[in-house]
Image (tube, rainbow, N blue to C red; front, side, top):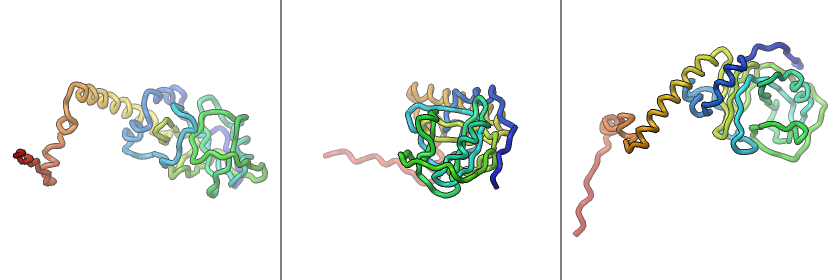
Length: 202
């Protein structure tokens, strides 16, 4: 179906921006290890970072016509999430549409403008279903998707997880071992791990 859905709900900008201090790994853990896109999705330049509401685009292989259509639907803070309908590693845009990008491939192979697709319909991108308006967070570690309705709860969980991790980092810096901080010794012993003293040298 070739359609452009307009006026789709989004995560409020202030909520999306509040995710800025937290990395993809923290957010992924905070929402129960859900929402992570495939590890092949990499930033095209280092230290890029973003958090915003998804404008989803379903496009035919090697055809970027619907990207131009989708840009019209973008508002401040939006993130284009683009999925070809079949595998394709063509370069869907170049220097004329220059913004932070995470992708499976970089290619000089150009595209055409011939076939319709869809904007703001649910898509599957790098193994994750993405609905228009879902929150997308990306950094050097990858990309995580937070369902729009869960954004505030996941933000609170991310804040709590970061506080916990800061406390752990302080203990590690003070010389404590992860074995003790995380209470691993008893569980390791139950699994049968034994410590054996090496024999003294002659």
